[in-house]
Image (cartoon, rainbow, N blue to C red; front, side):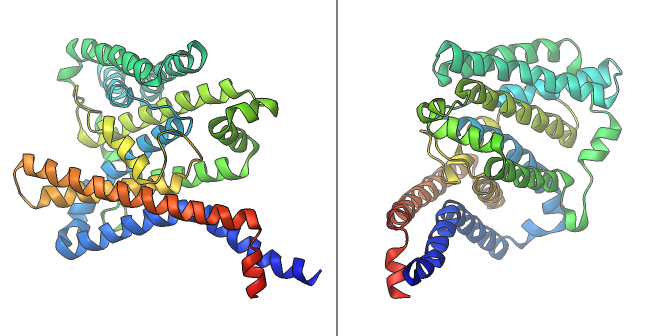
Amino acid sequence: MAQQTAGRPARRWVDLRWRGAPVALPWAVALLMLVVSVAIFPSSISFGGLATMTPLLGVLIVASLGQSLVIGTGGIDLSVSSVVTVAGVVFVMKSAGDGASLPVAIGYAVGAGLLCGVANGVLVERVGLSPLVATLATGQVMAGLAHIWYSSGVNRLNVPAEWSAFTGATLGGGISPILVASVVLVALTSVVLGYTAVGRRLTAASTGPRAARYQGIAVRRYRVATYVVAALLYSVGGVLLVGSIGTPTLSLGDAYQLSTIVVVVLGGAALSGGRLHPAATLAGAVFLTFINQDVAATGVAPGTQGVIQGAVLVLAMLATGLTTGLSTARLLRRRRTGGTADAAVA
């Protein structure tokens, strides 16, 4: 009995480290990048610097959160940029062009993105197409629609003033409400995934679909839902982004095609799928945003900026992947033993 009592704290400690390890390292890397940025470029945390950076960071977090849901199933979504762009174009077309109210315009924009998400989910999970092929094809369709609508008159329109004022507002210190809302969204997603039946079923459908089917979980339905929710998040990001910029462009979402994938990988996720860690995705977005801003602030030629950014990202992803893998393997061994070694020491 004494041995069992002594072993319980050790087991709890192992479980705590098991849950925290995948998130701790990405945040350590992100905070290190933040310290370096502030030391080298103090203006990065000035009011003007934060007012410019934090809305874009918020949009990146929202879009990357959607990408992480898809990658968690072992898939990948290459329609991100097109959905972000078409959502921005549709929003301006309805709000400034047709004179619809902001809620109605947002509904149309999100609806356009959801159609792409449903198509992605059905083609990948029901038809059995490769995620690369399916999402690239639907992305091309969405890009074509965006071009048609943009050329029909949206290119001469601007975002309604009230929406620009809302998305361009700042809180204390220059922090954008978009960033605050994205952090709240990350927290809510973490709670849903970790503490609700829907979240646990989605995790099971993503990490072990065969075992989940044996448990009676509608695996395909949940996996299709990840593409739909991801498209919803991309659309929201597009509506927020076009408000911050003030005018729609056909390159509105280009920056999010690969950056969302990089953010998820920087957060320690495996492209082969696995358990989702939204807080780690948040850390990856923070790291990527600061490295991009710091390299741009150096004033070097764009080609050199690309070389520096690519090299730093490769090193960061290698460090994150290697350290996370070693830490997870060690904690897995300790978890299997039930913390008996720690109990013996105690």
